[in-house]
Length: 277
Image (tube, rainbow, N blue to C red; front, side, top):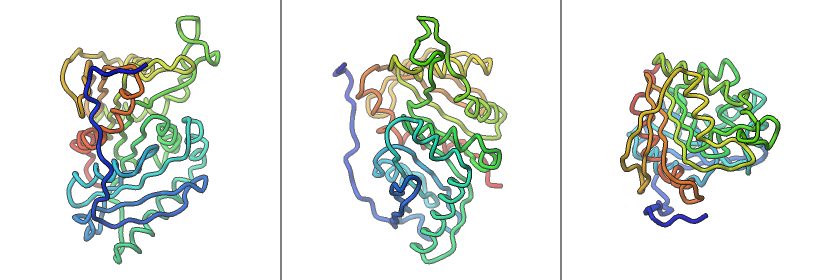
């Protein structure tokens, strides 16, 4: 399907000034680390780890957040399973953080520590987020999570939609539900955006967020307002520091809108960040 009624504004690739480092990360894929010029003197950085997508948009997003943010962006391939498997061993995320810290220390020529960590997963990238959060130590250390049109799971039986008797495999949603409860209590920050796309072979982001909302005893509120880049928001859920934003659209461009809207969605996520421990 192709949809032309909305603008679908796009961010032009631009190389922003700052410090960049690249190294081989999980599965031998490149990890691109960026610190904006304004943050180069900061000894304590708010680290954003972004999964699945070109680095220039996460770089733009952190450049708009003040003088103490950095980002590490990596793409492992297609399908959330690839991300989940890559981070199923907690040591992989530990190694990733250690290497990011070392690269930033070398690049900035002074010791660097992370004041907190925000995980961002677009589309398939949510597989890394759920795998990381399954580990209790990582769950404790991650302050905020942003999921951009990517909270998917399988049907049981596999490939059988709900209309034909299938049910959602909720095991992949358990870690996110736990994080959502912590956000509702004000201990974490969680923002989830979703479109109306129905993949057919696995559960849509509408179905998974509906499950999450129901499990947590919450309800959607109907809204009608503009979002980033011409997006149209149709629903909202808020409880404590947990937000779900539902947007119109069931086409490829509507899906990409969520990635393109990262600068605004990340700003919203960081607006209620957890205080530094």
